[in-house]
Image (cartoon, rainbow, N blue to C red; front, side, top):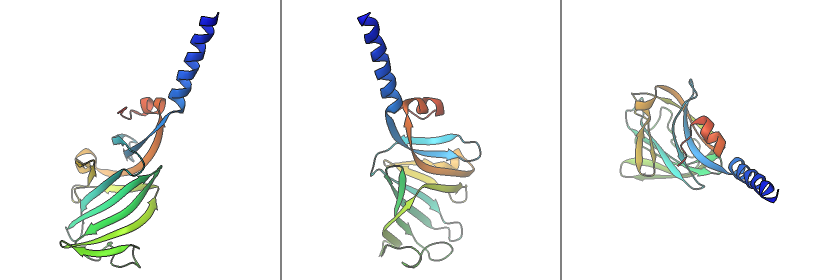
Length: 165
């Protein structure tokens, strides 16, 4: 009888741990299908870059993000041309503006973003740079993706197909 109770207790403890233990992932999900096309485990302070070619000026744009809980923080951007949707002054986007290596660099933006809707296309060659690796989003999907941070339990990860890394 004691062994039976011990086994039941162990089962409940393991179930509680698996159900209650959440891990945080950076997710890229195709909006139309809902499919997760890329994901990675992240922690507070994890950083990534979205790199693309500006559709009008055909110059490189880099946007720098970091993870804060289940939020994303835009903390910097680099670009080479002015106008057509790009910030030009603190009135457009608060932060410190620097001119370095042919780029206008905006730092200390610290804008909280829940999720990033991104229209991926061949013209812009959208890439996600994470842990020094470049992922070519434009080769994986055409259309709109959302990039966000989500917290998942073990069973959520199994159900949604999120890598268990």
